[in-house]
Image 1 (spheres, one colour):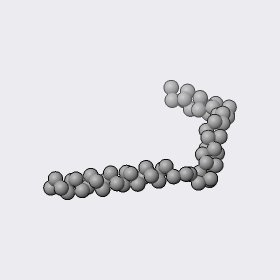
Image 2 (cartoon, rainbow, N blue to C red):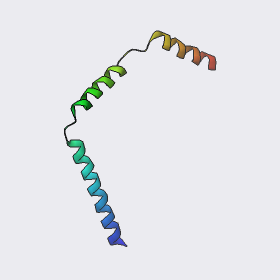
Image 3 (tube, rainbow, N blue to C red):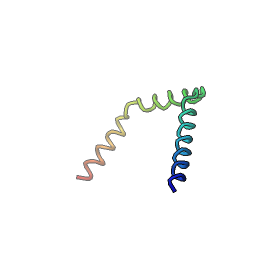
Image 4 (cartoon, rainbow, N blue to C red):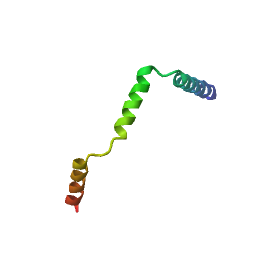
Length: 62
């Protein structure tokens, strides 16, 4: 029984090492472009109309 657990633990460790190796590989060009696009959208300010809508919804709950 103990031997089976050791084999399973080693297999799980090997899977983890393979995942880490894939993460270390260079990202494709499109991945960095997608990251820049995402970051630019996140940094956009909240439109006033949307902010007002959220305020109206908050005050309706009270």
